Image 1 (cartoon, each protein chain N blue to C red):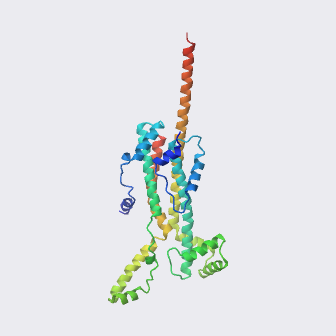
Image 2: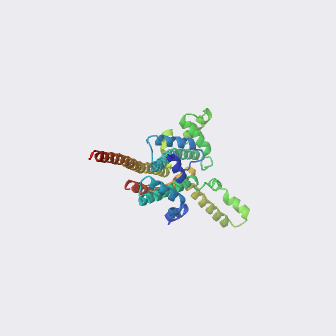
Image 3: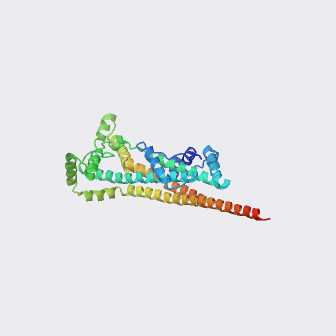
Length: 191
Length: 144
């Protein structure tokens, strides 16, 4: 039998990955999902590929949600430091990221503490203000994540339905075969 | 209307003839081999291809959102009227109206936010297309 993954991949356009993402990772997560099936039908393979793509979109949007907050926080610190306000506030962003993850160098750590002092903010104040500033876009990122979850639910129901139908067809085939055998047996017995 | 401009940009409001594509024909015959009736197979194939079309547009919206115009974003507006006055040798009123125009451009640019905000906004516009596409696909499969 032809591999259903390959046969569907040639017919249906595959989900596209971002330049920094690994095709091998995508395939390995797809194989993980497909391993739940004994013999997946081509339609189920197609649906599982879409489901895997949803999982990847959830990961992407979750990372971006955090980035939106960092950008907003960096913007607040940049304004307080009276630096020219650039779109990515690169200098502050990088130092802040290190500071919040506990990986900042001594110089960066002192610098961020100095900026916080100048802005008269604590880290949690900054986080709250950053959230307020980026609320509109964070809410949009949440909507996007929610949409992917809902899409996954639709896909799961469809997969269940296809799986149930194929099991039902197999069972009916077996029952028909038994009935045919019985009929033959009766024919053989009859004088 | 803004929404109609958006849909023109990603092309999802345009009905395309999926049924004449090779992918549709092959997908349909594969589904018929799986035991689906011709009508159901045709519906599932069309809905699957339509869903992929939406998700490809979603990817494009994410990957090719409007880039930040760094020069406008970072433009120093305070010294601009003076610079413009020197360059154009026009009246002060001309310089300040050009400066106002640049100011408006900068506000518009900054209002859209950085690259992440722009990507999020672009994808957000496609939510309803994804919702329609998946609900049609799921309905066709479940009631087949």
